[in-house]
Amino acid sequence: MNNPYQEAWEAFNRQDLDAKVDFYNRDGRLFDVIVSQQFDREILDHLCKLTTHMRLLHKTERGADLIQSLLRHKRAMLYFVQPSTRTFLSFLNACQILGMDTSEIRDTATSSEVKGESPEDTIRTFSSYVDLIITRHPGKDFSEKCAWVLNNSNRPTPVLNGGSGQEQHPTQALLDIYTLQRSFEDQGGIDGKTITFVGDLKRGRTVRSLTHLMKNYRDVRIIFASPEKFRMRDDIKEFLDRQQISFKESDSFREVIPESDAIYMTRIQDEHDDAEGGKSERFYREFSIGLPELELMKKDAIIMHPLPRRNEIDVNVDADSRAMYWRQERNGMWMRAALITYIFHKDEIVLGESL
Ligand code: NCD
Image 1 (cartoon, rainbow, N blue to C red):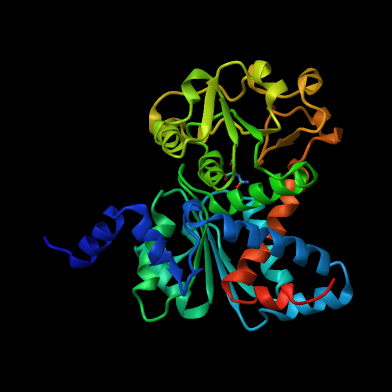
Image 2: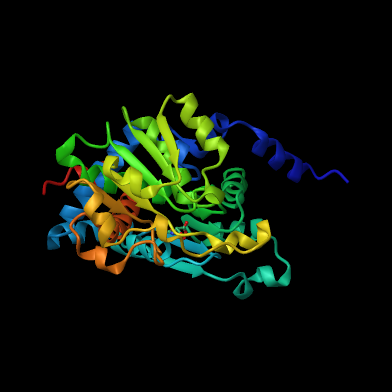
């Protein structure tokens, strides 16, 4: 039976990325944030500058008061139906810093989906009450579909993707860029750096989203270090080839440590095992960092991790000045606060405030 609505969605979804990116933008600005390919160098630099400005401005009582008054008239919905600690809490705290009220659903068992309501109707319902929707969902197209549903409704509401399936985590990519840029501020920025991604590169969405952004920087080199069965998928390698970004794959992490400026660790994403049949190892000693691996690192290199970690970074590494993952986590809150400020066109007000 024909279902024009479903057909329209499928036709939208079949389009290439450039057309979709246009659909997510409005008046030459980001409106929805769905995929990391939406960010160009100009917006990355703008958001990094805004993040630093907000972070520093907030240290004074006057600055914190001003920031708190920016979006007091706006409300956000956090629809997080896949496990999350950092992304959820950093978005929630970002909203609170900006004076926004929030509501949340973290389990479909507590919403009307249990009565048979479609996820699209559930999302449409949120837009009746709030001004911003932030989603985390196991489905790879979920946030995209939300944006499509709402942009076609009479109450378009921005959608921010807080992680979808194994594919995309665009706001994590933003905070990762901010962490890289901040860490390499005195070393010429991200341009010219070698970034090594380690672990489950096949199923981790953070590495995929961040890799897309490397086309915005000059002379970046990428190394993918993973167990054979978790190698980076071909689509990303083809993308790097097309962009003429130099990369190599390695099954020996220790060998590539000395040439790395940033080491981006990830955990094995074994929650996806069932979909692929069979159980994977939860930990590979050869793809982890402990005190012996620290000895092999450059003096000014950094270690990142989107977290949560298991054993791939020994807790003894935390005290090393090159361990950047706790700062990276905190950067996430400030970057998300900056992004929401930008989405509601308040960025110039913040940047106009002297520190
Ligand atoms: C990541 C995720 O959910 O993709 N976590 C996060 O958002 N910081 C990484 C992971 O779960 O391994």
